[in-house]
Picture 1 (cartoon, rainbow, N blue to C red):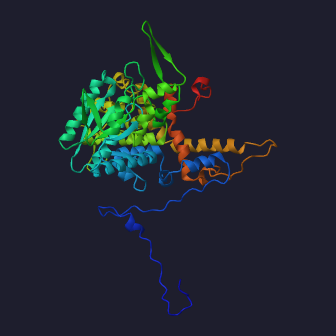
Picture 2 (cartoon, rainbow, N blue to C red; picture 1 turned 120 degrees about the vertical axis):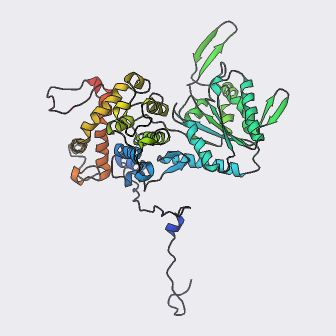
Picture 3 (cartoon, rainbow, N blue to C red; picture 1 turned 90 degrees about the vertical axis):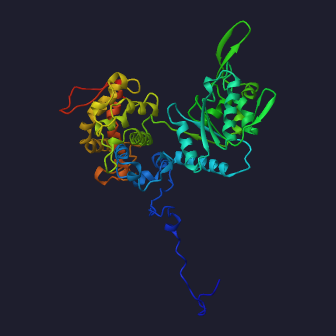
Length: 487
C-alpha cells in the first residue's frame, strides 16, 4: 500500500460497481433495479416478529394493495403489468410468483440444461414431481424443458402407470421411448402415478424402474436394449410432497394385502419391516432421482393460491377466448364473476375444475364475461359448490365499497384486545407502539392495513362456507351465530 503522504502518489476514486450493467437484459430493456429494506433478525422471542421475519417477501414490501385486488388485476391486465418490481419466474408459458416454486423450477431448469448440453450422458435424467390432483404437475416441468428446446429436439410422452397390469406394459413404453431416441429426439417421459400399486404390492412398480434409471437399459426377453438420452419425470399420485413420499420407508401409512392360499385379507401396518422396505426398493428409487419439484395447488386460503388462480384464469382466457381481451390487453369480465373464480373456497379437482368452468361457459365470440354466460348451477356443482360460487358474485358488489371501513373495525378490535392483556401482576403486557401492529389505523403501516383488509375480503367466503351471507340494510340486533358456525 502506498503512503498517502507521498506527494508522488496519485489518489483515485474506487470504481463504481456496475449494478445496472449486471442486471441488463439480453433484449436491452431497462433493468428493474430498486431498493428493498431487508427485515432485521428479531433480538427477542416475540413470536409475531419471528413469524414476520421468516415469511418476509419482496412482494409484501412492494405491494400497495390487498392480494385479492392484485389477483384481479393480474387477470385483467396480465402479471407483467401488475408485478413490475417483484421476482417473477417464467418458464415458457408457466409463470409463478411463489419464491419456493421459482427456486425449485430454476434448479430443475439447470439440471435439464446441463443434461441436454452434455453429449456423454448415457442414462436418463430422473426427476420427481409431487402435488395434489389437478395441480398441473406435468405442465410446469414440460414448459421448463420446452423453454430450453430451441432446436425442437424434445418429444413429450405420457404414460399412466396405474393403467398397467403387467411388466410388459413398461417394456412396451420403454421401446417407444427408445424409438424416439433413434429418431434423434430427446424423449421427455412422464410416468404419471408411478407410485401406484402393482397387484397386491404398494409402490410395486418402483423396483422395475431401477435398471432403466441407473443403467439406461431394459430387458425384453433374452435381449437387453439401451434407452438412450431421455428425461424421466415421475409424477406422484399418492402424496402431495416429496418428503411424504420418502417418509414412507418409516411411517405407517401404507396399506398391504395379506394374501394366503385360502383367503385374502386387507390390513394396515404401523411400520414396514426391513425386508418389506428392501422389497419395495423405495430407498434405491429415491437415490436415483436427481431433482424434484413440489407443485402447490390452487385450494386453500393462502395469498399465493389467489395469485395461482389468477395466473391460470388469465392464461386460459388468452388461449381459448381471446375475444374477451380488448385492444389494450385488458380482459373484460364482470367484477363479481372474477371475484367468484378467485375466492370460491374449493375447486374439487384443482386447476382442472377452474378450466372446466371456463370451458362450460358460453364464451366463444363474446366480448364481455358476465354472469349470464356461466354454466347452469347443476353443471357448476360438478367442480365447485355452485351456491357458494353464485353467492360470491352477488355479495362482492356490496362488500367492495365497505372494505376499508370493515378493515378499520377489525384492526381496532385487535388493538383493543392486545392492549387489554395483562401479566400475572396485573400490569399491561403491551403499550401502544410496542409492536408494528400496535398503532391506530391512521398511523398503521400498509403491511398491517393490508392484513386487515384481506381478513375483511375473506368474509364472503367464510360466510358462504357456513351457509350464511350478508345484504345491505340495518343490522338485526337479535342475530347471533351458532357455535357450529363460528371457527
